[in-house]
Length: 396
Image 1 (cartoon, helix red, strand yellow):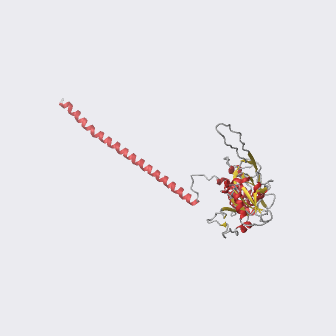
Image 2: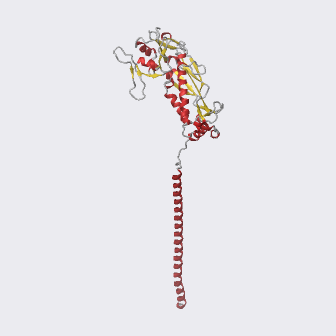
Image 3: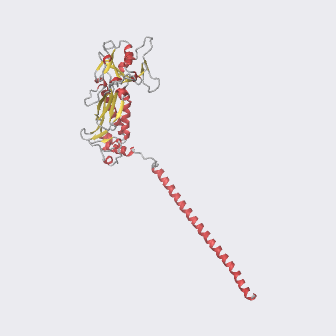
């Protein structure tokens, strides 16, 4: 048995080194494959980094802008509008997608196009910055052809009651409707085609400035003295009665006591307190420069000026403690003139307008010039007759 077992033991001992060698060989192959994969990944990452570096260099050389997280919504419309103004090319405007916003509507039903948001905002800011009643009035945006103001002109009745007696019927308040129609305000600036072809010419800034100047002057005059025929109705167009007999649908006035001139400062004080207390807190004087030059020389009984200039930049001058709006469309001091107004115009006068401004390019009517027909719809009227008082330069 010992002789038989000995060869078997020898055979098993010789097999162990062969398995170890095989294992070592397999591990060596695995490590080699792993190193090869690592080297391959390193090469690919280096190639990717080189590509990114080349792309970054190309971006810097070509000046390509960095991608922003928020898209500029005004840029496509502004470029399309500039192309339309300069050359009459309306293909880009027609191709813009509508988003339901007033300033993004591309084609108007009656021809023409809405100006781009940048130009339109410029026009509106100029209109608000001019010395016009618009600055102190109530300005509303409407999408209809008119704006209705509901005003409660009477008071609801009341009475004392006892525990045993039945209450009596009281008066019912009456609500009046004031309708403010919107009228079309237009401007017609022109420029030569050669000037439009000049890329250095700021067509948007020039167009906005011309339209704003024309619209501002037309609006300011209409809000003061417009007759309401195809234009807003100014507050001076309404009937004026002596404040002691004032009634709705008219404006109350206080007389200076002297025909065509100031008697003394008492008329201004009387005018202030002719206005109801609920309106005085937000009241403003309105007059032109000539009248302001006369008023600022006036003094009270102690020799102090009634007029005081604003202490901070942009702050209006004050008269008897109330701000003064110098509106050049107010009449000059003359016999029977209503040269000074005082009141809460935020409550007393309403300006209704559509928020859009339309431009129609006409290269044919005034060759070699190009006409730009700009239109805007706006209306205005007195909305509270108790909120405004006038100063009449007359004996009574």
